[in-house]
Image (cartoon, rainbow, N blue to C red):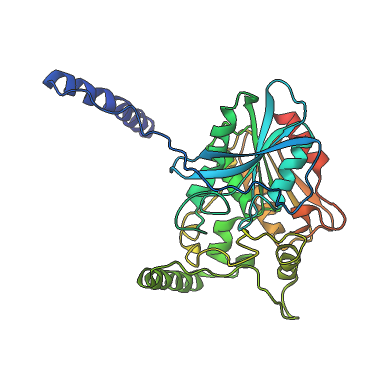
Length: 368
């Protein structure tokens, strides 16, 4: 019965457009229906000097590019192409961490993968960095998942890219968004999520799932009250980035964030985490729209990479278990554990340079 209903529903949806067109023709209504909504690219103000937190490679060519997502937001990206590359290349789009910009570790990953033969882009998410979108410093489970698919749109239509060999890398909070994008978009042939956060889980449940339903209700009340205050005040309050100063009792992972975002190692003037942070109402949608709901339906390859000393390790551990549960395509899923690595060690490698770029390259080489 359910199968019959699904077939009937699909048939109705497919024929609705044809029926409307036939009716219009029969009664003499001119067929002036537009073929679609035009994709418009906003002209963005892009920095022309090298302003990254990492050294520029002489092995790749670099340029700024822009592309548009399904919501009409123009995104800014750095494109890295192996020098003297010929023919159509496999391509990778990189973004993250949550609250960072492309001049930080996503650019480092993109440049490194370009040195290894891939055409890559590191992009600023919607509302962030050099990308467009108003108001600024907003993040969304839907729009940010869409940002990855928009990057795939862009890469798939480049003359020097093999459209059948496009993958993505998501770092930190963008690791969870990358897995969510992989579940939604079969064009993504391979996905790597590095030092992953599940942003919906941490917003809804708190760190280490410490919040119960009553605590979640109080959090919703606070966010809702902030919405009212923002509208009354005429601006969206920022929640603050990584603190400028830390107390001796600060958790180690907060100290690690400070060491990256607030020092010469990783500070960037456009980074939300390095400065004023996101808008205070950002938890609103993440608390109520769970990511990763269909991760065990991903048929293409996924690799999760995490340090075993990271406070966030449980996100990847649980995500991997859920992704392979009852999934007939579990064989192409991998969980790579980096002994002794903290969460931010996988941002730029840390002192011991622990990012497993050889494993990441082997994964993409095999699956794209």
